[in-house]
Image (cartoon, rainbow, N blue to C red; front, side):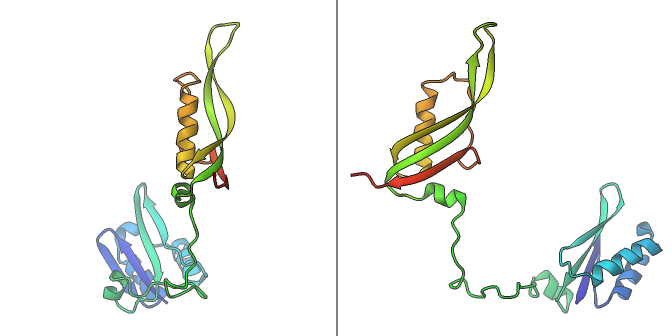
Length: 184
């Protein structure tokens, strides 16, 4: 396991922790001490493969990255990326997992049940003032996709509630939809 270290424009690729500590000790601003050296040794010996950054002073850091690259050129060209054990190597073998955004725009004509939680502006009769109230709205509608269902529900509500009401994003957690079936 090799280590890539960078502090502003100074960078190096070393093969052991002692060389890394020597490199950092050569930079006076870092102020190498026993605690920092012990922390770096612990990081190198750990199973953590995330980059580690160390704060020198406010907004000034140096980073250490564990890598399997043999040379600086290999590291810069990302030739020695760490692969997950057991992961599929071919893109054909990977399963497609639909995200919320892809499910939302998937074209499928039929009946949808849409659930929308939004902030509705209502007037308080006693004072004549207005306030926002959380409102839960459920509707079944004919639509071509989940996004079309969302648009139809919001269009319906905009004609029936105060214009200051706030509607959530179609991609957020406050809108859910279910495909009920094809229409005839």
